[in-house]
Image (tube, rainbow over all chains, first blue to last red):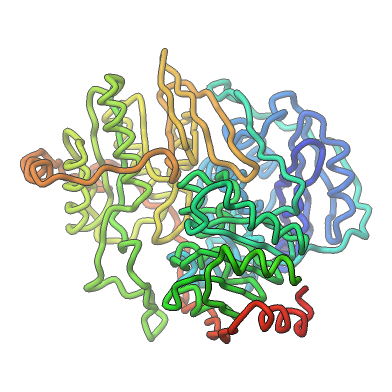
Length: 313
Length: 248
């Protein structure tokens, strides 16, 4: 039977919403699931994780070095946890933190890693996307000594919060390097819903032309309680910050409703929205590739259509 | 200081990917290939650091078949002084690539190891982190700004919540994100000059690299297709459709 170690992401004392989805993946693999919280002081985050359905135990590794999550400091501790506990799988979300951390863990354990698990066929068989999601491969990872992977959050549903798993302090014997030092973080705070978990998302592209013009996207989003995203072109042009980029190398999202305006639909952007339930595209070019994947397409000037839509919704 | 830059030959980012009918992979024969775009950003950064007088020598390395030499020539046209071609006709997974790059790093002893954050073919996003791990070096992934001074690099990283800044001791592995720079257009004289620059060939065997246990690909399939929807004539019709589906 599998024994899974799930590395939980958290910030400011809050468990990341993606952990509940990664638990869905863990449950599909099957077996015991221990959730690891590496923090400066992880008790309150651990209590949140303990509520997630399917969690066997929550392990808390408190260390001042874990105040800011850095791959170089976390990886040796996770390797020690994985080896002490005799785990068959070590997984995390495919967030930027998971992408940074897990390959370092896998390499230290001497095993390959399955990036972006999107479906589980068995304890060591998974689907994952390649070529910006334009092909899906089914893979079999070597089961011995263990399997490392990251979970594509857009492919899984959050588990219920009806559990009360035991929380245990864990001590690890790991040498933490001093060659990597945290200097600061600039968090783009927003009162809007989180892009990766919001049921509705409104995105804008290069056609908006400026950050001031992006205001019409925000207004539409606020009208329907949506998160706001953007194409790479809009981020590169400096209209919006990098954390709003949706696509192959940005955020992969799966909202119920995705409305995009002024986005032509490059394959790299489509990679990020393929799992959206309903896609609405507004573009002045009727030949734009976005219309080939949109459920509803409207050819028109976004500067007229978007405010009108905000008014009428 | 010496900078090592690893580059990969991939199917060009503009190519529409076709999955083979028998599910054995994607069509790569007769398809345009080019340098992985994130590796171009890594090359550009190395060249800019040399223009600032921080880097003195740039060595490019690739792992791949005979055609990968084209990618090395591109790296040389960007401004690499010389190149190393680790020849193999086998597909190389990230852990094996990392073992190979570790061996190259140990021969070259650079202060800086730059590469793209991911290759746009397998989208694995692993090789930089794995190479740093095997070498016991710091890693600064998804870099959007790199400053080097006093044996240290200060790197701004694109993370889900915004931007994070790390300070790492050199040598270090830095993987590049989109906003780090805009790679230059290569000029014909530089492309011509690149043809005369030295490329050393080697192999996994010569470097003493043991390939890692492989992840077996049992099937390759196209993604579930989204059917083309309908065009609406105006905002009123769109609002009506969204309301009738209970989406708003």
